[in-house]
Image (cartoon, rainbow, N blue to C red; front, side):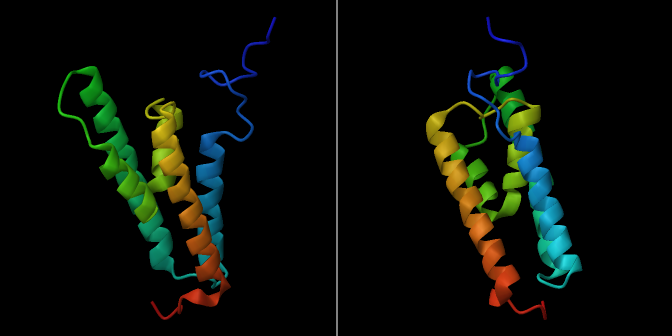
Length: 131
């Protein structure tokens, strides 16, 4: 018999909770800005896009539950790629929305990796702090 709470709702182990990943990334970007490795506008952009993306997920879930017009997956993915992925990840965890469809998750995680690579490039001096 399996203990409750040891597996995610969809059956797989939750090695690092989605919320933790999103919050650690946002804290890391804020710390990088504080230390002078990236401009403050990047922190503000990630926070703003994350909040907006969370709201789009919430609206899409509500629309799905009430048989209304849905937000296209391509819109959610574009928002993730542009920097709203932490909000999308939080929405997936909190709202339990769009967290099971494999094709969506694959594209979403590619956007996350692209953002990590971009932040590493910026923190490594790839973007002038003059912005």
